[in-house]
Image (cartoon, rainbow, N blue to C red; front, side):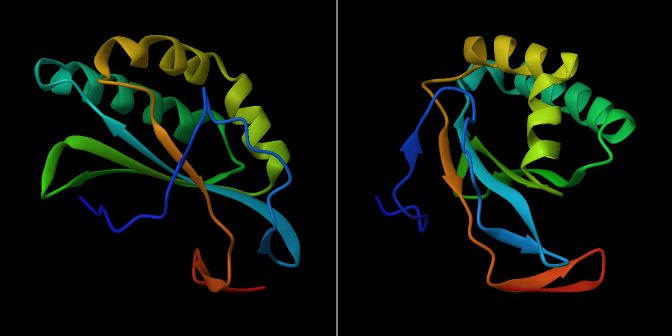
Amino acid sequence: MNSGLPSPGRIDGYGFKNSDLLTRGRAVFALVVRFTVLPDHLEAFDALVSDTLAQIALHEPGTLVYLNHQRDDHPHERVFYECYQNEEAFEAHEAQAHTIRFLHERSQHLAGPPDVWRLESLDGLIRGEPRAR
């Protein structure tokens, strides 16, 4: 079945380097991550995500966007959109205790490893500011 997404690279954690995304003329880092959650684990996974998001909001000024989505046609999938000010902000995110906890605890709730896509920015808006290549 075609998910409408490009073919993913399966990787452990996120681990991408050297993104070519731009913001204010500087590199940013963006990912889409798709998780397939075990049916009996949806509530626990969503609670883990909510706890993690609360900590990201408090402790990660370099995280510009971190959204968790549910697909209507695949209710057991969760899709994250993550956008960081730059690669250093992403690395700071990965080093946070709440992220380490999420990365450690998520696997018990998943049907398999997540699919991860690195995004290349063409243009758009972040916090109302134009972004261009």
